[in-house]
Structures are given as C-alpha cells and as structure tokens.
Image (cartoon, rainbow, N blue to C red; front, top):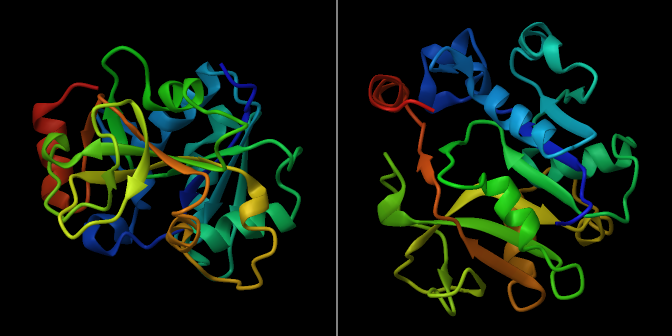
Amino acid sequence: MSDINEAMIFSAGFGKRMHPLSTKVPKPLLKVNGKPIISYIIEDLINLNFKNIVINTHHLSERFHDELKPYSRTIKIVFEEEILDTGGGFLNAIKRNYFSNLKSPKVLINGDVLWKKTVNSPIKNILRNWNEETMDLLLCLIKKRYFFGYKGEGDFNLEEPQKVISRLKLEQHKDFVFSGLQIVKPKLLQKKNKKKFSMREIFFSNIKKKIYGINDKNEWYHISEPDDLKNVNDNIKI
C-alpha cells in the first residue's frame, strides 16, 4: 500500500440543508449511532497509520476543539475567517504549512460523508489503488443507484465502468457520484492564484490528464437533510 500519511477533512461549511440541527452543531459533528460523523473518518485514518489530519473549520469552530479532544495528537484544527471552499481550504492549509511533506499526495475527504465498510474501507481501497506514476488525482466514486438516500443527477461516468479503476468520462447521463473522498498531488493547486475555489475546478481542468476514478463497493449514505440523518440512525448500524 502507499506511504501516504497526511489527510485533510473539509469541515468549514454552514450545513444549511441540515437546519435547524446545524445551527447549534456543525454538520460533521452530528451523531450517527451516538458518534459524530467526522469521528468515523478520523478513526479510519488513524487505523491506517495517518500521522497528520488537518481539519478546516469556520462555522461553530470551537465545537470541534471540544468534541475532538481524544484525537488531539493527530489532528490540527484550522480556523478559516472566511469560507474558502474545498480547493481554497486545501490551498490555504498548504500555504500555512499544515502539511509536513508537500511532495507526497494527500487524502482529502468531506467531513460529512459516511460509509459502512464491506471488506476494506474506501480510504484503504483508494490508497491501495493509487499509482504514483500514472495519477495526479484519484476520485472515489459510487454507483448512483447504490448510494443510500442520494437523489441527485450524479457527477461522472467511467470510460471502463467494469474495471475498478478507469479514466473519467463526462456525459449528459451520469451513473456515478463523487463520494467526497480523493487523493491529490498538491502540485495541482500550488500555482493557483485564486483564494476561494472548489476542488471541482481542479477536476474539470485536469479531466484529460492524469485523473482517474475508482468504483467503490462499500455502502455509502447521503446525509444532506435532517430526515436523512434520522433514516440512517433508525435503519443503519455502522
């Protein structure tokens, strides 16, 4: 498996679709089976020997310090005075030297994603399938119809959907959803001179280059609104 051991968890949003729950608790700290969503992600990373986990925050930032004390040896909580979006948040962490080795790729993951692993966790799967020579960016994708609670239009297709790893393909009908988990080489952002931007800008500007998707087979849960959270808590044991 790869020697990647630094990650960033995006946790700075307001979680507006999760109102009123997210007015008092940041969305990544909402609980599933009695534990904050982000804790499942952090513990998976720690179990995979990650040494540095950067968490960007903005809305109710102090709640992260309180809730995540058990992981204080491994995590760094960054406060953003303004929300910079995913790409801007990652670039801000790079510029502020929150990572120890910028030559090594980083795992990036949204702080409100949740899965139930079948054999290996999605993070372990994406690390095992990372190829340093051929890839600059690897996105973890989920087949749209298998994504519990998802109601959107999807994000991508794969050129070879029968394979575990494939080049991405953009078509009107999209079978796969981007999970919020990716591996990326920091060099893709270091020349960016915008302050606020989404990682999606990086995806689409590199779509013809060394960007790939992995078809993950774990059980993923889309938690966007209060009803989604209730459904997961009522029906799923993580």
